Amino acid sequence: MEKFKNFISNHLDFKVYGVTWIAFLIALSIPPMLLYLPQRFGYENGLLESIQMVVLFVIAGLCLTAKTNKSFFRFCAIILTILMIREVNCGRTLFFKIPGTENSFYPWREIKYGYLVHPIYGCYMAIIGLFFIIKKHYITLWKMIKNTKLPVWNILLACVAMFMGAIAEKATNNNFIFEEGFELLFYVSLAGIVWLYSRNEKFMIEEN
Image (cartoon, rainbow, N blue to C red; front, side):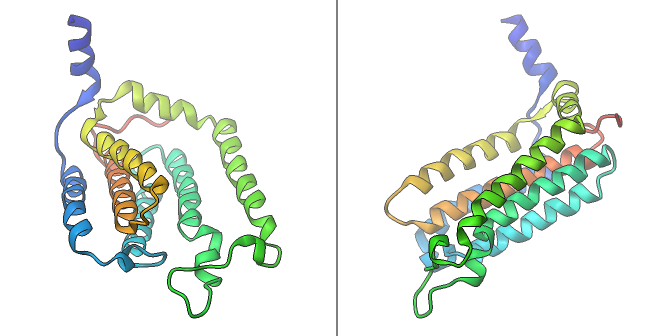
């Protein structure tokens, strides 16, 4: 029991920071959104997805202007491009809408050279993963985890958002607000984590 208490004391930070309150507000806003927002607000390129993209660009900005471990955070900005590309389905939801329909897009199999998109996207992710290993960014990541207290609430909210988002993706009732609301919560929680590790001296570690 004493070891468990020491672990909690030495490795977990339960303080609620300003960026944590923002994530809490998004979490609390999800039930009202489910009750009152029209489903079209959760459509592809709709209000919620547009806000998500803004948050992703904000996170990228935080990474590119980090006060320490600049190489690691620049790499994190590259990782964010994977999420940005995913948000627009590799461009499919931007350029291949089915005319006269709502929230419907041509599948890649019906688009010229569309069969190449997913392999190229997969290669892009593989290259980024290889870069992570070659540049030894995993060392910086481990130092952050090992040498600082983890921001519990932001991490917990991000995990809840991922779990609920996964449930929403498998649901058959097409509740777009449910899925996109929790996806927004994940991105906002992530933004808070990046803010703390790139701006707050309590979480910053020395350069490699």
